[in-house]
Amino acid sequence: MLTFKRLLQNIAFNKMSIGIAHAHRFPLLHEKHALRELLVYLDVDCVFDVGANEGQYAELLRSIGYDGQIVSFEPVPRLAKALHAKAVYDASWHVESIALDSTRRHVEFNVASSHSLSSLHTPLSGGVFERDIAASERIGIDTDTLDDCFRKYQKTLGFKRAFLKMDTQGHDLSVAAGAGEMLSEFYGLQSEVAIAPLYQDQPSLREAVTFYEERGFAINAVLPTHYAFPTLIEVDFLFINRRRIHTDPTTSYRRQRRRSAEVWPGANETNKVV
Image (cartoon, rainbow, N blue to C red; front, side):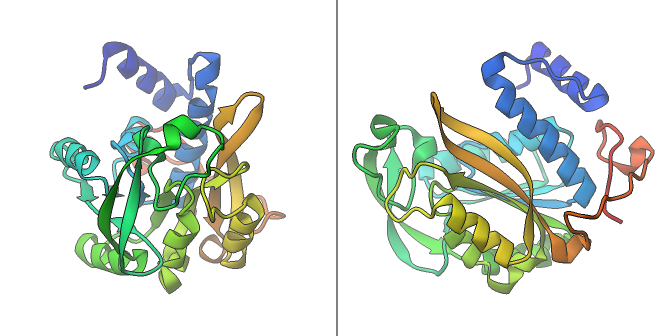
């Protein structure tokens, strides 16, 4: 439930683009602004939330005024149960208690001491956040592919302009690879990329950016997520699908002002792809 303070913060942010936060919370404020502007610009009507944890990202989407469909994927049973409990009150929020991968298979999943750092990948010994990232238990899970899930939900929900968010602790490229040709159907995506590796076989920043660029995606924004001060450990990249919006880095999109009824309820006037 929203506190009165948080409600006022959301109103100020969505109505006037005013955000007030402690300095250490600035990255979240930056993410909210960048994400809201991009999702409205792309006219997104469904967000695939892969690596949903306890639903923080879905709640972030609702706090910035997004009221479209959300499909959350979370393989850890107790976290998936918490997600289902929250989604009961939101008819446009759907939960899948599975992990996504490049193929369907049965695998061992590392549940970390800090559950937001759980991963299909084995943590590096002696690495950053070693205590938090250490596996407290290993569970067997069945994986599915984004290709199958995209087709399933597109048929069920009838969305037109999907956005992909991934936060899978070193496994984002495998999730994206599992989309196959369907990856090109996403108008944009958000992916967590490591600057300093935390897991074995984790793709580097260069590998990740090259992977997305080769599939037609261009960088929209870079959002710091994890620090081990003074070193930056991980960032989120926001990408746009050039093949879907017909633009390139040298082309300035026109600002098309719209009445508030033409964007999300509660969102400030902004831009959309037309």
